[in-house]
Length: 270
Picture 1: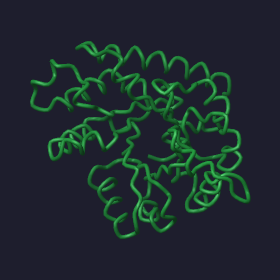
Picture 2: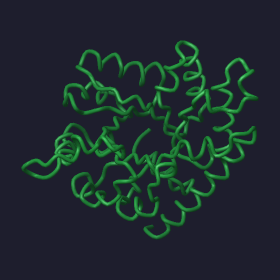
Picture 3: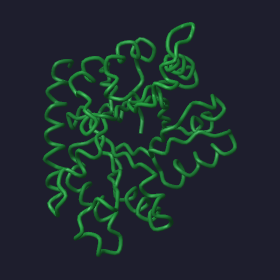
């Protein structure tokens, strides 16, 4: 999916919402667990209820890999079920030397057909290059995350600012804004003004709105650009909005609430 394709979907749906399918088999309704593939059935009902309100789905690989081969079957079935006009993110947080990255890139882009994959840039350019060779695919580099441990390294002071700013500055030269996105936690919204000075045109994947307490209004105020440039992810607050068998209706209600707020915020800028 190209940058323009993504922007067109955002305008069409008046939404820049990403639904995180971080499906924990221990949290899905008991009524699904008697089925052959409860994880896929849960995902399927979430997708059916929300696909017209979101522009992306993000699948956290850890929740599927935990289940071994059966989890990978659920992952593949989910990927195939998601409509082709929706941006598909593999939240894998990979980061390794070039030849290993070749294998990961082939797995996510050729086998599973994801549009994007999250990566750690810690090992540098040669660990990211294999992914950038794929036309129409994206890398999403960890920049400033919302977890407490982000303070250990990401905000260390350098001669020119913070370490995460150095990561943004250097990595933005590895590829264009039609290839590289960045993860910035919603709880770091106050840093978005500085981030936009370094990467004004890139899309930002913003987790942390919802269960983690990030403000959608602040994220939009400080992070929006001429192509919106934001993909705001919500996972637990949507997929676990209800613990009973009406979970899909509850997920839709939550998505409608966020999509309505996003549309109103977009009206302030376009």
